[in-house]
Image: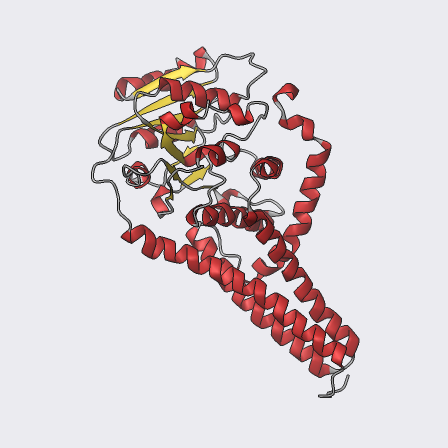
Length: 390
């Protein structure tokens, strides 16, 4: 190995390309992190909130995720909120009249329990539970969640409902799985995938282009459901009640995002690895029905990150064994790597995810390949996304 400042034109172009492409990706991540932080620290603090908190019906789906209903439901009922009711939709009449729910109904007059009949093959259990809950709601605003969701405190309802000023129709809350419970192989990739996906739809909504929400933490005016003919736009799908439905009812409506720490829900899964796999498959499938330019931007930036690093590797290869080029390439990578790690760490903090520090850029680099594998698997099982498969 030798040191020489005489570098060929091709090597110089490759170094410049690596710096430029990697720099664009790095800048993009910094802009996203800054926008999320500004939203939480400035926008949410300064925007107008409802003078009087509106009555709300909390719909708890206990059909698709029985989770730990007996443990988490009391936390929902214990919310510090002036007027709300809780409608639990259970799987069967036996579950709806079970000892745990019966005991809670004695203590809480605002708890109502119903059930979804079995045997329906033309509608997903999730949609059926939500439809029953909405029809049973007595209030004009509904907030949907699931039996496996745990509020961070007793201010969850207040933080979500404070956004319902007269002009606001939809409030998007955020939820995430319990990261500390994930001890299995691939947990870091699941974190980066969850954070990247979450930041993508949250930022799109902040910029006025909502296309996705999460039914674990989604509030809207009940009339929107009827005006949209319920889930008519995704009736043939097993899923789609959070992204296809939201993208339809949000057109021309005022939508707000709530990201205060106590407004975010923790979601419990017995098999977290399997649950993440299913959720990713569903998101990839329904994304074809809610195409937004944010998908293109995300894909483009991922490719820039790939191409930038590959250009630097190519620069070293063309000038080998010139140590000057190697040092220049390593310096560029280290600088960009550190900035991307910092930016993604700030995004993770807002979304209450673990900071992955210097492994984050590497995982982001591999994420497009992992996504391609998931899409390949999904293409072989597309039929399983339709209600005709149930």
